[in-house]
Image 1 (cartoon, helix red, strand yellow):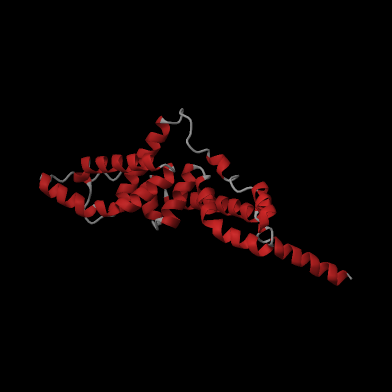
Image 2 (cartoon, rainbow, N blue to C red):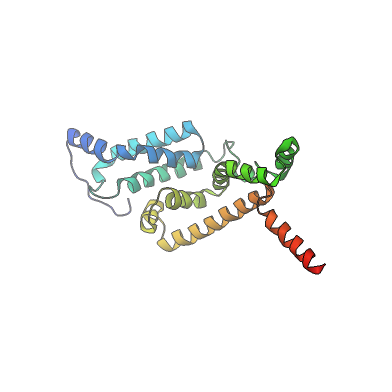
Length: 214
């Protein structure tokens, strides 16, 4: 760790007790973080297991009273990056660049032919699928941008905590988060337009202009 905490000698019983009490409650959010990074249940489970093994190994360096969640997230993030580099030459399980095309205009038109072509049904469809589309748009972001969105907007870390987890300056955190949110916004706007959501306002403006001209 960059702060180089001093090692505190613990008996095995004390180490096990504190490890269970301080780190195990973070299991669920840690798994969620791992899954959002890997998009694979098996990989997420492996990553969490590796994280806890490393955390146990170096637990005597963990400072009591500090943010256990941030400490574990940092270990997991580093493990993910190292594992990602190892697998970089292997075929990817998910092509992030293609996920944004999962809901495309052709699919929407096909659904419309089945009977969901009205404005009300398009809007209902958007509401039903927006959760999936947010996840797809998030997954399509590069890892660095996806990570800051997860840490800040989903896990609630402060900028200071994010800087420690990611080993980057706070200024870089702010800049990366701003760009990530803009990318996410653009992807969701494109999806909304492909669903026809928001086009009604344009049509209304056109009709109003034509009425005024007549």
